[in-house]
Length: 429
Image (cartoon, rainbow, N blue to C red; front, side, top):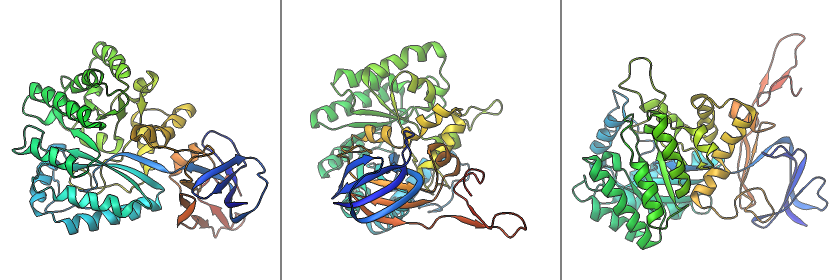
């Protein structure tokens, strides 16, 4: 006897017609023709069932603040940072909580149940930290939320940056962040990397740094981060986010850098939507894409995952909380259009991101948490192409969100009356 059975599911690895039996909060069986009964049965009708989506890089304290106190006219990273600096003194805990909860509602509907968010610690009031700690507790029943202590204005550059970051960690923030390329000098940036890795080692915490988010090929803090990761025994517990300068580096230097990153087991987190929007702003033509070397990093065995980064905030006026939108852009900007490429892109939204976050019991194997999404698509290729409706979202074995299928009704003589818009019309009547 199961609590719930999902029948006729297609899985991301290509298996089709699979039944998934759920007992309590865990997956108890994954097989064809699963015998037994359940209190509830969902017929997936040969649609894709995936583990819930994971966003390894987000800014929840800024989300949905678009237009406050003004718009980013230039659309650049630096104006976005300046604009956030104008908004920060006006922030209240209540407003931060309200916007974050609204975003979490959106995320659940998209099947996004695991998020790592960077929390600005540059304001010594730490109202952002207070608000995000409250959010973490309130959404815990349906979203795994990890918090990064993020010195937006620079660990050393901000007047009380060092003290504020330590206080944020004392308050319960999970992860040590940094932004070395935003310090006053390259040397000061390198020193900040060493100091922050030392803090993480002393406290037994992971590290996730905004690293080299710039078009400058001489911004090479990822090299320092990899070296300090090895030095402090942090292998596998460190993420380098963005890494856009790698797009502009020469191939010889990168041929040295990537093996060093692999030795340190760095988790790589590009953010395709934001990277292609904000980078290359000083170029005329040819204009750089501004995203790191995804294909080469994957080929070297590094764990690469993709973040959404921003939704309707000072840096990005768009966004939907849909990780498939992130993957859709990654296919284009990384030029990974092959069938196997697309499967790797899908993994970067799910299993790779879960690995970067250190999530336990994640996936579709027996014993994993029953955190699942049923999509209006037949396979991962269709999911990435169509960004389809999430028909059902399960958290720990219980349905927490449903959306009706998208159906188009045609009024054309001699043609079908209804088309399931989640599919190629030639694939299913």
